[in-house]
Every structure is written in C-alpha cells, then in structure tokens.
Image (cartoon, rainbow, N blue to C red; front, side, top):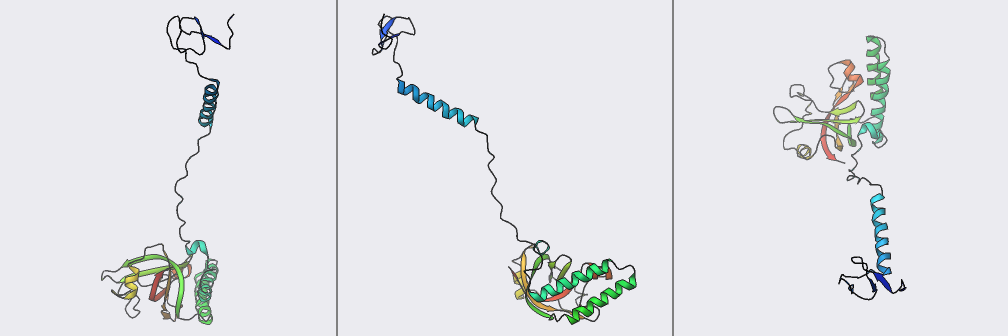
Length: 232
C-alpha cells in the first residue's frame, strides 16, 4: 500500500499520485497542497478574525466639551474680595430674615436694619477688582449701555435701564467710553471683574433699583457707576 506520507489522492478522479507532483497523472488536475506551515497560519488568522468579531463594541466618546466658567451661583463667594463677600453675606442674611417676617411693619424694620448694617460694615462706596457674572448687556433707545452683574444668588450690581431714571445718577454707559468699548467684546454669561462706585441713598445706604420693597430685599440690585469691566 502506498505510504500516506508520500502519496495523496486526486480530488477529481481519485487516482493515487505522489505528493511532490503538480498534476494528477491520470486526469491532469492540479494537486498543489498547502504545507503544514500554511495550515497553521490560516488557523491562526481565523482565530484572530473570530476574536475581533466576538469582541464587544465600544462607543466612541464624543469630544469632551470644555468646562464652562462657574457662575457665582455655583462658585459661591469664597473667590470674591473680602469687602465684596461682606456685602453679599449681609444682603443674603437680611434676605433670609425678611422672608420670615410676618407683616409689613416687620419687613420695613428688616430693610432699615440692612441699611444700618451696610453703613456700619465699612464697605467703601468706590471699589476695584470685584467679580461676578455678566447677566444683562443691553442698550437704551439712545444706544447707552445697560449692564447688570450677578455677584451671588439674588445679589447684583448694575445701571439703570432707562435715561429718565438715570437723571442725576449717571450710571448708563456712555458711547465710545473705554467701558463701552470693552463691553462690545463681552457676552452675557461671562465671568468679569469690575471697578467703579456705588450710588448712595438714605433709604438703603447703597441705592437699590427695585420698584417694590419685596424686590429690594429678595433680589437686591444695587446701583453702580462702572469705571471698568473686563473678562476674567
């Protein structure tokens, strides 16, 4: 019987032929046979392909967005200058006390107490390097700039929003002034540093622009003459 190591059968006609011949001597069909090395290579490649197909798909994460600048609401007051923190904490404490007042007389007393405490706190009327978030940026019918900056939740500084109210206070930002030109480069929501001076009043110590007493105590917006505003 022919040795299996030296002979093979033709897959077409079944005739026996030596392994080292290229064609069947009976029918002429090609008898080329892959070597053992070839078979091992094919088996290895098949295993790799199966592994790739069986591997769980992973979602490609989208580009990681840049974190937005923290607003005063999230960042708290720790990063503010000490005199600014003093104003914010006092305004928030009086806001809380006002919220539990049970009648209008008590509410009026709380407002008077806030005025007295602001006068005693030693906060200068002219300040520099205070910080906050730009929450209002507009113009009136004459194109004068209207600005409000949130220093902390429910505590802000800003200009009047109309020329009539601003008579005598002069808080609206004048066209072509350095502050006006800087504001043209800013966007609502940006964190800014600012300098300038408060407008004084007998009713609130630092003049406040709300129409009602509730607004003045619950969401105080102190009137401010801006001398500089720039992006942090």
